[in-house]
Image (cartoon, rainbow, N blue to C red; front, side):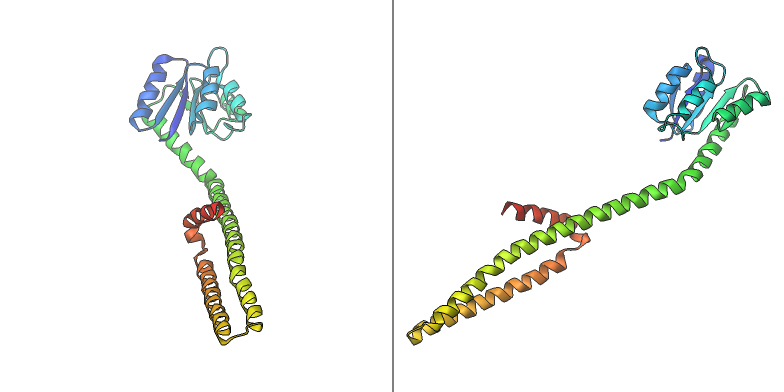
Length: 233
């Protein structure tokens, strides 16, 4: 839900504006003076701010100047509410950082139109930034997945390398014993060991090929769990 902050010291006008915007399904946050408004803007990060110009303690010019100096609030669209239509005052507000003016008294539709237009313009201006953020998130996700895949592959290769050494060691031992066999029965036994270890070695090599085919980004979640199991072995 789009959040709109209203900063207005007139309770009646504040409530009227809140009602108008709430009926249009905006989430409304209110503040009755400039300092409260600044605190609310920093805390709630609204999508748009409506702010009275003439307020005690801190006027609207002070509010917009302060918010424009804050990195987290500098981008928020800002509309002044004023009973003064003087162009010099409007120019001062624009120079301070306001995006638009609404002159009191105003009709509900004027408020809604100004809000909709300003939100739409802000969305258009910030869309390239949001697109770039999304691309960055996608690249970060791909990088994490590639890093995970590299770790999983390394873990698999380490585990398989250990598994492959055992049958090779048995083959080497059987060859040595075959060379020193004294009877036909001994030679047959060592040949049988060689055949068994050869079969086991070929099966392990096939497992390597199958696992390599499984190590893909699509299987990353399953592979993470498998990798955790390997770490525990």
